[in-house]
Image 1 (cartoon, rainbow, N blue to C red):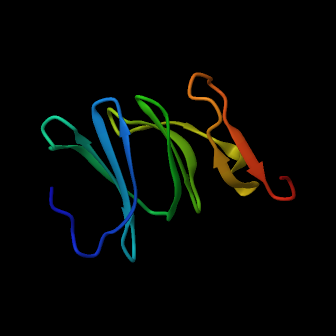
Image 2: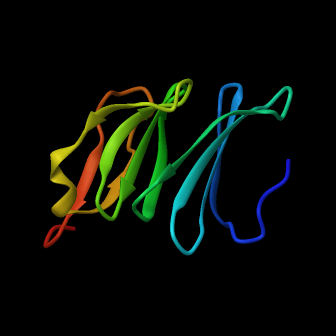
Length: 111
């Protein structure tokens, strides 16, 4: 695996047979997904926004919170499957129970 010198590594996460790497450069953030067995890139996508949080929801889904984007992405295809409209109120995302289909959003003014 080779990473560009300009890429600042932000997070590394494992999901079943995938390795997710999220990093940023001065202009774009990038999410790269690798097959753990072959270490080959399954796909990568760039965002036009700064990624703040990347959380695995299930083995095939990830939640990405960015400065101007908040949604659920399919790990196997790299496509966005849902946009969450509470982005402007959400300060932090907390994944509370991996067996549940619910997430907790910490909003401004709440603890």
